[in-house]
Amino acid sequence: MLSGMESLPQQIVKRTMGGLSSREQLGAGIMHKKGVREDTFDRTFAIFALVYVARGRGVYTDHRGVSYDLKRGTVFQRFPGVPHSTLLDPESDWMEFFIDMGPFLSGALLESRFIREDRPVLSLKPENRLETRFYHYYRSLKECPERDLNRMVPEVLTLVNHIYALASEDHDATGEREMVDSARNYFFGNCEKRINIEEFCRERGWGYEGFRKIFKKHTALSPGQFIIQRRIDRACEWLLASELSVREIGDRLGYPSPYEFSHQFKKITGSSPREYRKSQL
Image 1 (cartoon, rainbow, N blue to C red):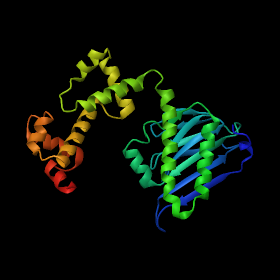
Image 2 (cartoon, rainbow, N blue to C red):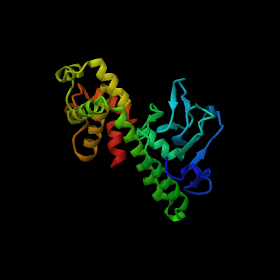
Image 3 (cartoon, rainbow, N blue to C red):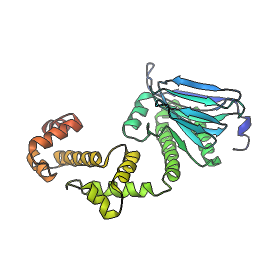
Image 4 (spheres, rainbow, N blue to C red):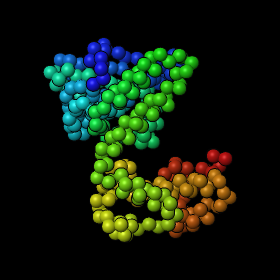
């Protein structure tokens, strides 16, 4: 615990970005909850929040009924519209740092998997430096001139990214991350080919079913879905940066017919290849 932090009062700052009716905001704070037992019970919130436990014990239960122990060094997240519960040990003198953000920013981060709804609780090694970073962000947000408020967005993204990186270091101690990164790089570089995933695993001495589970845990996509997504990404690049016809692009990506290429492209992007090219140029 940071020196003098125990004596800090409840401190919360909320800053709205945009006009009077804007729902987009940034928030941060430090909260003490001594004697509190039921912090949140089966409740939903309109905004995203990330909470770092600086002191205390408790239990987080997600919308599926899965429970996670909370203690110093644990981070839990509140996702917009997703119910959850947090029950605290009233004798543990709970103290937390939190940051939150409005629905549009958090929605984009969820869509891009910058933040992960499938990992509502993250375990970190407790460290005073992280508590210092939370406190400095809180002070910066509180003192930021109105004209510079939009510049706080990169700061909160940097902090959230740092937290996820710390969690991944611990979460991936068994080498899972190296396996997934190796596969992703190969799939990305060879998405124009038809990849036999079972053979890909066999060549590397990986069990196929185990690899599929690990890959999906880290990316939220099966290996096959990931390859399809990268293939469609490549198609988008060619549609925008080349004069290749839709048939030629489908052929290069290994589709048996222009119809099958167009059908999968529209399923992923919501528009046909020709519509996509026309709308982007």
